Amino acid sequence: MKHPLLSLFLLFYPLLLTAQVGSHRNEFAVGVNGGYVLSNVGFVPKVTQTFHGGMTGGVSFRYISEKYFQTLCSIHAEINYVQAGWKEDIVNLQNEPVLNKNTGLAEEYSRTINYIQVPVFAHLAWGKEQRGFQFFFQAGPQFGYMLNESTQMNFELNQANVQDRANTETTQYKMPVEHKFDYGIVAGIGVEYSLPKVGHLLLDARYYFGLGNLYGDTKRDYFARSNLSNIQLRLSYLFDITTTTK
Image (tube, rainbow, N blue to C red; front, side, top):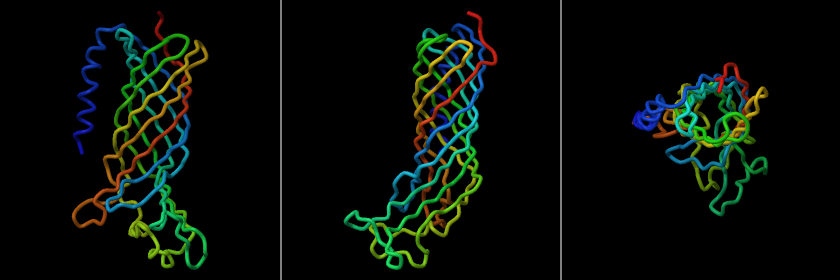
């Protein structure tokens, strides 16, 4: 589980070294961000799911240190509140919703897990530096800590219509999250529009793959894997604290 983080470091380390011969920058910006998150959990044994939708928001920090040829090199970090989790797709073998025999309603189950997440990106951008658009790619590690969790369901656990389900896995219903600390790799692309004395508006899409598990994964534990992953669409606004005179 350490190898993906090591590979990511080795990928960007040469860029950081070579950037030292570029044109120096000393630009620090802070701001706010917000967006929408689509999450699921990679359970083994499998739990059939659709995406769990949630909101996210936080504060952003960016330090631009170099311009190497046409590439602006910076470190971009955030502290975000994120509504993650999973939502189950409860269907029968004909891919039809399973009806609860007591309520007559299609059974629904989802778990919302609220996190504080801290991604730290190597941020590479190309385009207009002073006024106009840039395209950027960013990637790096992300760390998270679970604040709390909640369950949304429309049936009683002891009255679930398990017999009609295509996927009969229900062990997770009675299991609170065991590992509050989460970590993984996040990467994405986006566009930025800069306007002098106004600030920077960024729109990005990113994918997070968790390297940790929500539950224990030893031979004595039930789930061999239970890692969190999500897709995020995020809008950010940054304003400059320090800038480089060009």
